[in-house]
Structures are given as structure tokens and as C-alpha cells.
Amino acid sequence: MDEHNSRLIELIAQGAQLHLQGKLSKAADCYRQALEIDADNATSHNNLGFLLAQQRHWKEALQHLQLAVELAPKNANFLGNLGQVLAMTGSVQDGLDLLLKAANLDPGNAQVWDNLGRLRLNMGDIVGAENAWRQAYRNAQYDARVITSLAGAIAMQNRHPEAIDWYRQALEINPGYADAWAQLGVSLFLRQDYGSARECLQKALSLDAANYSALRHLGYVHMSLGDIPAALDCFKTLLNFYPDAGSARLDLAVLLLAQDQNPAALEHMQFLYRNDSHNDRVVFYYGLSLYQTGDKPRAFEVWRALEQSDSPYRLKIAEFAGD
Image (cartoon, rainbow, N blue to C red; front, side):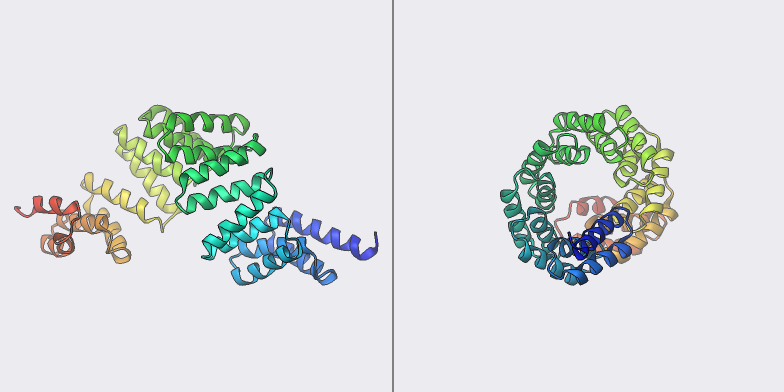
């Protein structure tokens, strides 16, 4: 092996290691140095393109990924990466076609099937996502993340007992996987097994204090068990981590209204209404927060947007008209 090839391999390996460590700038430098040695190195183009996509530099990412595929058209991983980025930048069908091509080229490639599952799910094709993750599982039977994704697709089809078995299998493989604990807790909650759900969700949060799904559903569990202060704490913590989470803010506001903490609820609803005034649920609860803080004229002014609609909230508003 000549000196140039040796240096090329060293730079790609070094870049990959830095990439895995999350040191993206340094990794990119390594990949670019590798391309200075060999401008037609498909692996360097692929790795750099994937990294640029992580940084949301879409145009340059696509340029490198397309070059990687041109240089190595039979490489399933390169095809899959290009497919993912095309889908993420709006060319969903082109991305799906490339991922299917990658899966046909290398049916034993679990990563390609996993990517295909995520794309199918984003497209709303839950059955297609489940099938893709079943293929991924056949090739990665000890990958807790793949098993959890498969379980999630099954749960979305309301097959919760089956999903619960898969989540537990994932946790046997990786007991420290917070997402599996969180999703197991969600399925148990939907089965109304509130005690077991609470244990699983608390376990998820002990592993990942900012787990969105675990925090939100633990709030729901506490509400179902009648522990309103604990539920409020969950939703407040959730908003501390995710201040832009509108659905969580709305959950908190509704709970505050139910507890007659009307000024606090109004503050949250004003924020939501400014940003989402076409959402019927936001409109109704903003009006209700105004009503319960004493501004009835303004409440009915806000509610007027729903009076001529077929919104289910129209009937609820009528209940207040006689007051």
C-alpha cells in the first residue's frame, strides 16, 4: 500500500471515529482532507454528505451523497443515505425509491430496512413501516432500537399486548434503553394499567430526564390516578425542557383551568392563541380561560370563530351563552 492510500484510509477512519463522538467539525475536516487526496473516493463523499445532512446543510450534503452513489452505485448504504436526505428535503417518492433499491440490493442490511421503516412511518404508512422493521429485525435480532421501533408501529395499530411483548424483549437486551421503557409505559397506560405504566415511565425518566413521551404520559397517568399536583409538575417540567411544545402547553393550560388556576392558564393560552389561532381546541380553551378570568365579552368574541363551523366545541360554547 502506497503512502497516499495509507493516509487516505487513516483520514477516513479518523473522521469516522470523530463523527461517532459527535465532533462533527473535526470529522468533516478529515473527510475533506481525504477528498483532497482522492476526489473520487465514494466513502469520503458519503460520510461527508451524511455529516452535512446532520448539520442541515442540505444542498452540499446532496452533492456529496449523489457523487457517492455515482461512484459506487451498488452500495446499499450510500443509496440509503441519499434516499433519506432526498425524503427529508421534500423529494419523498425519490427517497423511497432509492431506499427500496438499496433494500433489494442488500436484503440483509438492517440499517437500510430501519431507514425504510422510519420513512414509511413519516409517510403515514404504518403497515409498511411494521413490515420494514420486521425485515430489519430478521437481520438485527439483538438491536433494542430496531425492536422498539417495530413495537411502536405495532402499538400504533392498537395491538398493545403484542407491542408490550416486543418492548419487554428490547429491554431484556438493553435494560438501560429509556425509549423502550417510555413506550412500554405508554402502551400500559393505554391498557389502563396505570400502576405499571407509572413504574415504566419513571424508570424511563431515571435514564433520560428529558424524555418527552415519558414526561407527557406520566402526567396523564397522574391525572388518571387523581394526583393532580404530580401531573402539573410533569407538564411544567416538560415545558421547561420543550418550551415550543404547543400540545404539552395546551395540556397544562387545560389542567390549570380544571383546577381553577385561571390566570396561569390564561397566560399559556394567550401564548398558544398568538401562534395557532386556527386550532379549534386552542380557540375554545383560550375563550374559556378568558371566560373564567371574568372577561366574558372577549371570550364570546374569540368563540365567534367557531359558531359557524362544524366544530364539536360549538355545542360546548352554547352551554355558556345562557350565563
